[in-house]
Length: 161
Image (cartoon, rainbow, N blue to C red):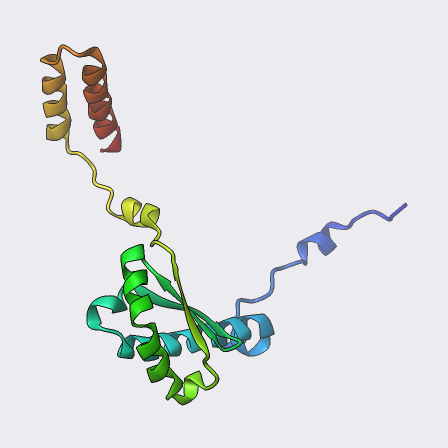
């Protein structure tokens, strides 16, 4: 079987020293490739945005560019349709740029923004006065389901404080 484990051996194991971000990028090839791809997409995004009408810029995101196909993500169907109608003009303008040499087609897909994150970020807490108002309103309600809902809201408001 194995010999006894000595406490001195177990205690000498320490995590390696923290490395700076520049050291990590220099030493780790996967991080280097990821960072390089993110920079490339950022540059392509800026070039595409410069060719779009100002209102469309916030609704269009470069997802990838490979094998002669530029994939754009749109925030909703309305903007995807508008981008589709501008596709030929955009393709012609981008093909003139060295960064898009070999570009053959543009594909647009709809990907709505992550609304759950936005909702959580805008979460509001109810004040004690609001909770009191909800309780007062609940007292005058004849519908038991509505009364229970208002009372639940008031309880939740008080717990959040």
